[in-house]
Structures are given as C-alpha cells and as structure tokens.
Image (cartoon, rainbow, N blue to C red; front, side, top):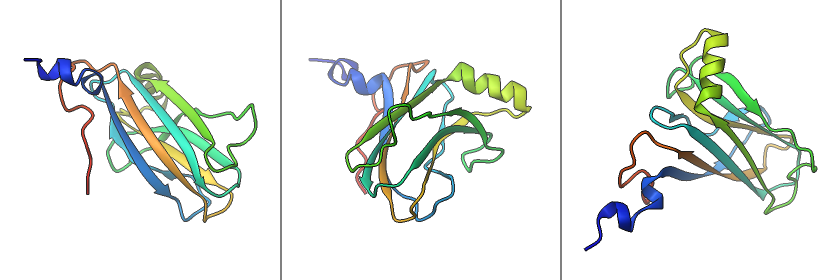
Length: 148
C-alpha cells in the first residue's frame, strides 16, 4: 500500500491555489495574502480571462494576513508586450530571501505575500494561481481540493 506522500507526491511539495480575480477597479489591488512561513519560493501566474487593457503585476510582502504595512518585493516588467488578450499568461516569482531583504530595508517583519494587480479598465478580469514551494517540511495536504 502506498503512503500518502507517495500517492500525493507533488501536492505534498508545494501549496497551490487559483483565484478568480475581478478587480472592479483600476488601482493596484492585492489578490490574497498567504503565509510564507516555512516556504522558500513564491510563484504567481496570471491568466487574462476578460478584457484587453494594460496590466501591472507586483508581489508585495506584509506583516499580517490583512496586508498591514505592505511593501513591494518585485515588479513584473513586460518585455514582450502586455498580456492584453484573453488567454495570455504571465508569471512573477520571488524567494523568501527577497522578502527578508525588503523586511530589513523597510524595518517591517514581512511574513505574508500577495500578488497585487492593476488593470487600465475596471471591467477586466484575471485568474491568478499562487504556488508556494520548497516547504521546510513536506506533508500531505499542502495543496488540497477547494470546493465552496
């Protein structure tokens, strides 16, 4: 009989979640704050689902799950053009070391991270996937089904 870590190998090595993100604004808006405690890497994938306007993509760090004292960790530079067609995918990542460096320079103990996105047209929408990887301890259930 296979152990749960053998049967769920990948889902025990990273925590992944996808969000349907309808900004309803043109200002930079955080998607969801997640805890980086015990993770070394954070990857954000964004897929355009509605609209064609310009986009800004940032990873921010904060001191709480409510986004207190938010600081920019890294900003996406679109070198191959804007993701301005439905189905376009873009990615941005950071390491725990980068979050720690911004913590030191800002004077805040940043522990939580979020993608922060803005679009030029408030009716645009995106799907956002978070992947936190390289956990301190691998265990079954890091990535779990989410059914509301």
